[in-house]
Amino acid sequence: MPVIEVKNLFKNYPYHKRQPGLKAAFRALFRREKLEAEAVKNISFRIEEGELVGFLGPNGAGKTTTLKMLAGILHPTVGEISVLGFTPWDRKKDYQRQFSLVMGQKNQLWWDLPPLESFLLNKAIYEVSNDSFEATLNELVGLLDVKDILNVPVRKLSLGQRMKCELIAALLHAPKVLFLDEPTIGLDVVAQKNIRDFIKKYNQLNKTTIILTSHYMEDIKELCRRVIIIDQGRIIYDGKLDDLIKKYAPYKELKIIFDEKIDRARLENFGEITDFDGFSATWQLERRNIKAKAAEILASDLPIDDILINEIGIDRVIRRIFKNSYNNTKIK
Amino acid sequence: MKRSVSNLKRAILLWRKNAQVRLMARMAYPGNFFILTASVIAHMVLNIVFMNVIFNFVSDFSGWTYREALVIIAGYMIIDGINWALFASLTGITRNIVNGDMDFALVKPIDTQLYVSIYRADPEDWSRVVLGVAVLIYAIAGLNISGWALFMKLLLYSVLLLCGIVIFYSINLIIKSISFWTIQGWGLQAVTESILYASRFPTAIFAHKFVRIIFYTVLPIAFLATVPAEFLAKTPSPYLLSGSLAVTVVFFYVSRKFFYFALSRYASASS
Image 1 (cartoon, chains in turn blue, brown):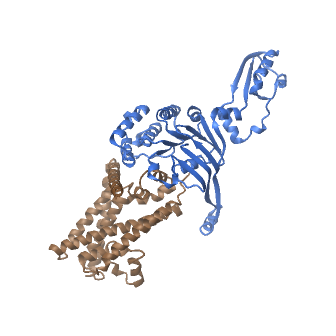
Image 2 (cartoon, helix red, strand yellow):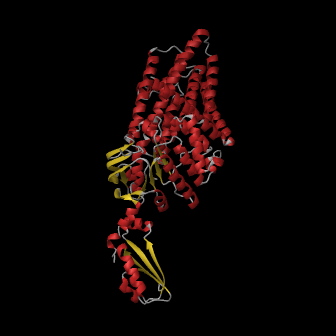
Image 3 (spheres, helix red, strand yellow):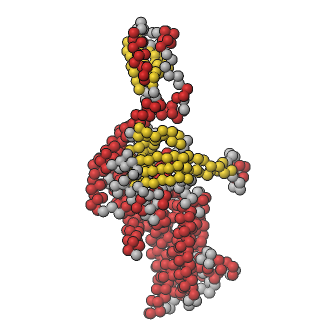
């Protein structure tokens, strides 16, 4: 039985439209145009225990809205959700004790006090026993290497240190499900790597089901075997990350570097060139054709210095999905 | 029954922990802590000064002597102090709705009303309560009540003042819940403060019958400080006792229902 099951989920938000200016502001006191935004449109998916799934999508796609419905913060307009057998927006205490939500852009810790005080408060809220609290805290502090900052006021900590402490606060009650909304946002590359390594290790050790939203492709590449891509409220892909590349980038890049400057006209016969600077040229070719094309170019009389065959980066794949430009690309 | 006792124990433990955390947070800035405490005391003293000014010109205030009027002032100070010391968090509802921090209240395994009521407390406001009790003691000293009669009156007064605290909390919660519709609700704090300010005076000063009916029913300001003071300093109708208890139960029930109804409108905020 899946841990998370979402069926035909819709979420609409009412909002008011207003013209700029003082007159319009005064008119809006008495009459406003009411509109409805469709944040989530008919999404369905299932997640099994222990999966670490990436939610990917541009800003405003509906990722955080979906996460908030899974956490019970928002009611859907239409649809069903089951997490650990519970309907999230019923907000049953038994459900709330089994999941955690971390939002990278928001802070749950007491700002003026050391993180340890917030941990003790969470211990009381989640009714964690003394033994369990000590054991879990020691484990998490060890994994995240934050022993030295537990008694430093949160406002004095760096962003990376704060995020580590946010994660500890969220995991003290050993939740079965963890919702991470952009946990590495604003962090430097070292801090991002530390957080990623921790999430990966924690998921492996505890088999916690994790949904992660992020704009950083490194987060998705490092952590998630499965991705759900949401765009304009709809799921446009749900599957393995490797399959995503194969599906949306059925081609590779062939780059040839020349010994001397080459006339572009000499290269046109080999296919459509996507990049050319006189000393190198790049073609975008279907995977099944690339070996043959590479062999053809190597066998020609062109003054070749080096040859490179590259995968299209996942970042570009995702960008192209969002720009919806794949259908217009000619493949040879 | 067992579960209710367990929930109550947890609520007290949580409140204590919150209060400790809040006090520590305040004391982390010693200068600010002392300034806040001094300003709270000054604010309260002004109420007593104001009453003194009135009694410089009159010998009774709609049938209330100076000492009897001080009992009302003391009740107001105690209610105000308890409201800020225990339930200052209610002022944060609007901010939490605007910036989406209400999200965190909704994911924790604790009664949301309890959580938003006690999450933040202003410990320096206990000085209002202490001052209120001091004024009460001074007022009682001039009432010529003693022995068993004083004990019984104080008991009734305490029960009715507790009702007043719960009634004001309920009114405060209802008004602050309006923020779920208005989103920006900064004016709501002024509304609740005005209601409490009005309770500083004996309800009898409001001569119009319609106004007095409102203050005993729909907006039960009379039951905040005046009715408890009547049971201590005067000989009121016993129906006011049952009336106070009934209003307390009704308003608490309505406020809780209204809060959760308003909460269903919560739409979070963009990240």
